[in-house]
Length: 219
Image 1 (tube, rainbow, N blue to C red):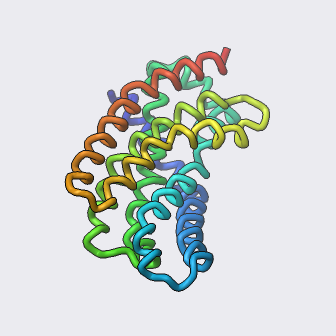
Image 2: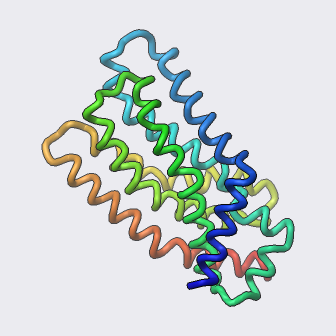
């Protein structure tokens, strides 16, 4: 456990010290949310109605921007080889990377989401529900992204292939995340439970897929 916490602390420290991935994700998120209303016109009622979908899609695209660096930087400087022969199993290495991505990329995006909601004329009473769906669903998204990053590690043009691989896997999270704010009776509770189930499954299963990919890549 001490080794896992040390690795997680290292990953968080490096991400915060560099800051470029976080800044890029936040900048893209706010720019995307700001530009979309310009193409939809002045219909505030329409904008308010589709705001959850816009925010979720912008969030997913922003979170993908930094995924390709999860393992690639450690592979380039030899750190990944050192970790592979260390005391931690590959599953915990993958878990640390995915959890660090969620804490340094998804959590800051969640924090600025209320501001993004205001740009889209989103109803204030819907913001807490949106934040809840993002908090529950994006943890699973980071673990799916971590598995995708491990699968494309070492491949030529892996950074281009990665979004094509993981974005279709984000579709269930998007469907239930937006469906929770549809306004139908019971939709929120049902959708957030399904989101929680998806996230728990991803947290449990994706590190094993990522670990297998890492072992194949390092052979």
